[in-house]
Image (cartoon, rainbow, N blue to C red; front, side):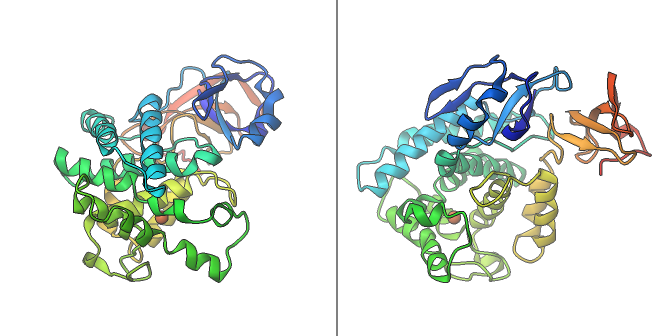
Length: 347
Ligand SMILES: [Fe+2]
């Protein structure tokens, strides 16, 4: 199994996972000739899908959270955010249970390297992004040796971090071109607006509300709303800031295509000492797979390969070569474990 951009769908690819939209199945697993649906999928804002083909046979994703749990939490957070924005009664218990389930999965997960990438549908972006930011934050929290109770508080703050975004007009949030100074100023109100919505609520602990207010603060003081520096930003704020940027950059947005994990990691490392807490960046880098299973990579001898499995070295996974250095398709694929090879690298 691997994921492909819809413009690259060809006739011999079979759908490996159902395509869902608003809880409905658009196309079933096993569906053939999905290349015929390119335009329809694009209309739904679906940019990538999971397929099975000859080169990706037998490859599994290295994910921590099942699609089902991810979906359930997405529905729960959607309900909470929509209700609170409309001043309706909010049931936090359900969301807390969902976060508790994610924490349990993270605590029992023994894979050293995991894939944090998740496919998103444009309309559902904010909710899917929220769940992913919670998962990444909880993974970082585990590396910071947080106990279960603290992980739940962190996860709750992380999943709610962008609650203030629902108060921002959709035409600004979904604008494909760059924002005017005035529009940017409006966007920048979302941390405080979101924070205020949870004021005086006793069903969420004060510390769990911090990421809502502080996820755009940066350790060099260049963030907002309070331009806090270093440890004046709560650790929860510093964790969620990194999780938020990581997931946003690896997602398709209306104004740009998703970045690869490698490109995102290089960017975050570059920024690490400036905008982010570099010790927390190191925690993130200690568990993500730089080249997730199923990703197509080029090797330095010119051949092309697909990532089969993670090894102990995040930069040197096990790969399956399917095109030789002259671009010829191979009939018999060759698998090599890059962690055991010294003279071949991914470029
Ligand atoms: Fe935000």
